Length: 121
Ligand code: AMP
Image (cartoon, rainbow, N blue to C red; front, side, top):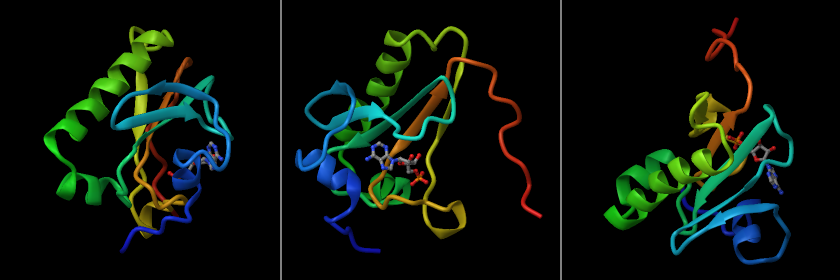
């Protein structure tokens, strides 16, 4: 799948629409999810044009990859959810119902989150 620069996270990165930013560095932006599914629900995205976790894993540089996971750890510590635990989710592609085709990691925390996933019927 080729990258679609009209996706909503690309528009946030270009400053065309606002976000509630929590972190920014050379390669990474993080902001509050617009429809939070937990007391803390942050989206972490690379600034580079990657469609999904698969695309990022195949093509991102070592610097981008390192900065991405360091950002997750820093954000989780800064917002106070690291000690209690949190969940990372990245939906990639059709079977995962990925809605926005720009790689993003959900950080969910701040309360017990229950079982990881329910098996579809
Ligand atoms: P996914 O299904 O993994 O692609 O998740 C996309 C996420 O993006 C959903 O949790 C949406 O609530 C979130 N989202 C969509 N538009 C925005 C936006 N403008 N600002 C923040 N989060 C958004």
